[in-house]
Structures are given as structure tokens and as C-alpha cells.
Image 1: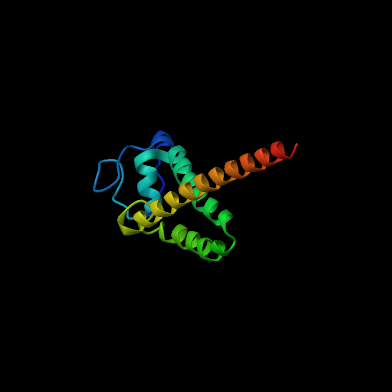
Image 2: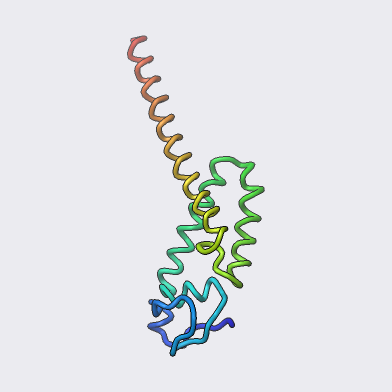
Length: 128
């Protein structure tokens, strides 16, 4: 069942409710609504923004990945309407693996850039 919480406080900050029946709202399968009910609109926006920002950063690493990641993100956004796939079940492990991959690759690029910069500086100092 899809619905929006009718209480503004529940909408903005959630009620800490994720699964099952409660006295405020009926049970829902929607990933977006489960997130909204548990942490509220403000934190839901932050959660999904950070999640997709990390995935988009992976696509910046290699343009070929855009062909894979953009359709994947679109599909995940659509499927999340039905189930909380992004942080529950097997797909969550894949999403967190992608996020971890982005962190490791970013770290390696920064380290390699720092080493190259140091080598160039040392080479220019030795030539002077």
C-alpha cells in the first residue's frame, strides 16, 4: 500500500517503524515508505542522496561504467517503489560493495597522484 503519513512530524522525522503493523499506519512494502516511516523525509533524502552520490562517483572513475551504472540506478529507483532493495536483501551487499569499491579506487587515485607529484618535484629539484 502506498501512502504519505498525514502527520507532519511523522512525515519529517519518522516514527522509528520499519516492518509489521502499528497503530499509526498500515503495513507497506514500499522501500521508500519504509524508509520514510522509519527515519522521516529529512533523513531519507540524506540517505538516498549519499547512496546515489557514491554510485555516481564510481561512474566518474571510468566512462564505460556509465553504460552499466546509469541503467542500474534507474532500475533501482523504480524497484525501490515495491521493495527496499537498496539496503535489504542480497542487492544491499552489491550496493555496499560498489560503495566500497568507490572508496578504495578514490584512495588509490589520491595516493598515486601524491606519488607522481612528489616524483615530479624531486625530479625538477635534481635538475636544478
